[in-house]
Length: 137
Image (cartoon, one colour):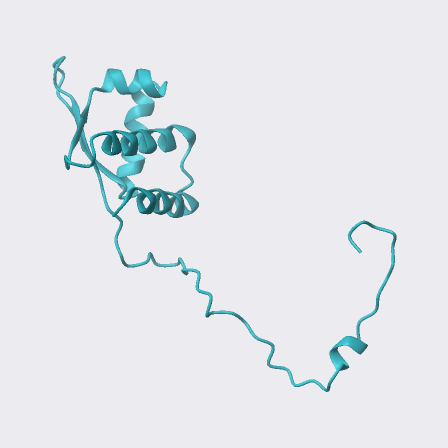
């Protein structure tokens, strides 16, 4: 899974879940961290206080955003302890290759064609042209 595929997957899931700005910013910040580390580590560590300051959210909003992203199977996380040096660990999950129920992937071959039999120029003879003076005529 590459960076662009993770971003595209996020927007597909966002259409279904409707993430708010905090959740979106958190996910893209985690993508930025992973990219900055050249994706060498499976788990990313980042302190909650530093995360809150960087994203500009409260502790409660950070918890809510993390939980919603986890429920959407975009990330996994292990909360750090109460100690100062214990950081929360994040893992960016790769999407499931099977499509979700209810979502129909776009396909250029699934186009609707006109199956009505018409006589030559019959379909044009039933239409009229109305000039209303609009810019959209």
